[in-house]
Length: 469
Image 1: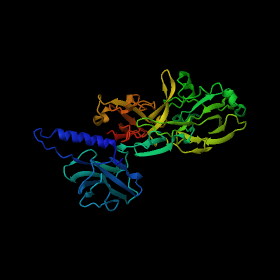
Image 2: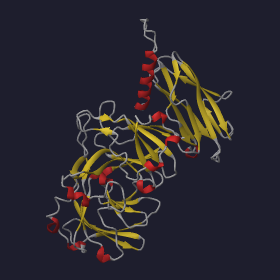
Image 3: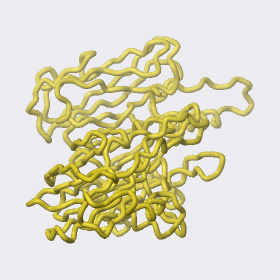
Image 4: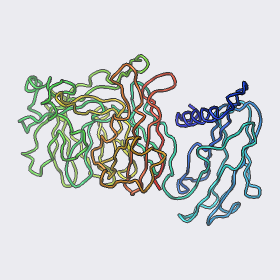
């Protein structure tokens, strides 16, 4: 897609309003307006190493030539010394051509002075559009400074109806980090406690055994409980085998690792499922592929590190790996497939929401897999709450409306509440949006604008967000 469904929706409403104002007695239909807007609201100056394209989008493809005129307004920087643009500025104006068949355009911002600080603000405003029936609406200004992002439309790279990717998004820097769901197994907590997290996106589960000797455990010893140590059994009792989906680090399936080795039991580990590969019908999903099998594990403390022991169920010897704590991250991660540590999440203060499949709990039915999930970074200090649009419209929500007592720690505050997929029609829930406070106390409002792709496929979410000021 060349621009988000947010803009499509906005332009559609605008066209409706303009058509509604036409003369009812006239038989001539008015021309559809040609709307120009910035694709996003801001960019972080500190993250521009040398140059960055700044995009503007159109409501429809251009059919003739024209131009967009931008006005430059600068604080504590000098054009030609600290930065330049392509095309160049002339009398504080930047003129960008509109060319036939194009649905967007851009100009290049080049930073010449790498020492520009947080006092600098560079603002471009759309002041005129030379094109038939042109309208200036939507994102009419674009700001470059060292503050948090002002907001934009976003398309997380979840990857389609198999939803193969976990996508970590930092709202203040407009960045996303993506990793395949089944590329890791265990997370080793970087905080003060010694805790282990399971990969709930592939439906992992774990059960403590009586033994403390990993080499003595065989498949015969666990045969009676294997059917129970799984997600989706519709047995309410199986929630003891999963990490609590609210994200509380004190509610993991694996008990805290003790300094007394004799208290650290062997665990039966269900490795869940590979990412699915089937192509489902439009609107459906194919999350789970082949079962990944089982492991037995035991985890010990070794100074300020974790010692992981692991083996297949019938092996009489085990492998070991030492995993150091890293307080810069929520977790350090390990994969049994590669027998190695790997990077998964950004640093704990550098992401806010995670688009992912996740294991949830259904009342009376135990653990169950959810697609289209959005979890906020509880362990990194992020909080969120939801608002219905009939209480306060998204566009009307401002800093005066923030209710600090409403913020929730539960990482499922967004969860799957933004879509409805139980019925045959898979629909976006349009009457809800979310308020998110990041680790740096920036507060954003976020609203989803798409659940499906243009061809009706799941796994192509879109949202818009804006800094609350």
